[in-house]
Length: 410
Image (cartoon, rainbow, N blue to C red):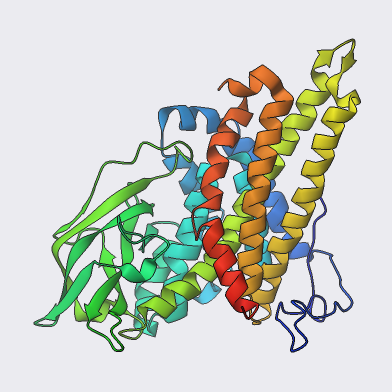
C-alpha cells in the first residue's frame, strides 16, 4: 500500500472554521517517508514475517502469551521506539511508531496490541505527566522492554463513561490506600509486568464531580491482585485481566501528575492511544487483503481463478482503497502529533475509520474464502475474530463520533 508521510506545511489541523466548514483547505503535501522511517518499517516487517507470522496461529489456538517474541522485540528497541534516548528509548517519531505497529499488527494483532498498549498506554503517561524522578525511575526498564506496564482505566461499571470511576484511593499516613476493581486491562499479568497506573477517586472534587487522580501501583504491591486471563473471542495471545485492589498501599509520591487532574490526563493518554489502535487496525486490514488476494489468485472455479471474476475483484479493490485511506488518516494523526499540533480530532477520525475498515476487510476476506474462511486453519478466521475489538477499545465507535462531533463544534 502507499507509504505516506506528511511534512510541515502539508496537511492542516482538523478544525472547524467560523463559516461552518469542518476542515480548512489543504495546502501542499509531501507523502515521502524519511530514510529512518523506512528503516523502521523494514525492520518491523522483516521481524514480523520471520518471528511472528509463523507462530501466530499456535499462540492464538493455545491463548499463549508470546514471551520470547516480546523479549526479541525489546532487543530491537521496539518497546521503547518513540521514547527519548535519555530515558533508554530509541527516540523515533510517532510516524515511525505507527508504521511499526502496522507491520507488527499485520502479522498478529495480539502481539501488536501488546506493543501498542505498553508504549501508548503504559509508558507514555510517565513521559507526559511524571516528575523527573518518576521518569528516571520507571521509564528506562519499560523503554528497554525489561518490563511491561499497564494502564488501568476501565471498570466493570465504568467503560465509555470513564468518569464514573468507583475505585477509591485515600491518603493515610503518607500513603495512598486503594480499593476497587479494574476490568479488561492489557499486559498486567505477564511474567515481565512491572505494574499498572490506575485512575482512582481521591476526593470529592468540585461542582459535584469526583476528584480523579492517577496513581502508580507496582506489581508487588500488597493487596493488589490479578485474576486469571479472560477467555476472549480475539486477541487471544495478549494478556487481558481484571485487577483488584484491597487496601493496596503505595507511597504518596506514587501520584502521577497533579492531584485531581487524572480525568484530563487519561483523555490525553487516549488521544495518543487512538493512533496506535488505528495503526493496529490498518495492519489487520492489510493482512486480510494479503490473504484474500493470494487466495483469489489460487482458488479455481468455473475453470478460472476467482480473482478473474469482477464480483471478487470489486471486493479486493474496495479493501485496497479503504486501507489506503485508513493508513493515510493514521499517519496524518501521527504527523500532527510529531509537529506538536492539536491531533485529538485526527486521532479520533483515524481510530474510528480504520477500525471500521478492518471489520469490513475481515468480513470481505471470509466471504472471498467462502467455506474455507469459516475454518480456523485459514488465518482470515482469526482476523475476523481479532477485528471487532478495534471498534471497542480506546473508545467505542459511538464515543469516537461523540468526540469528533464535539471537536467539530456541535
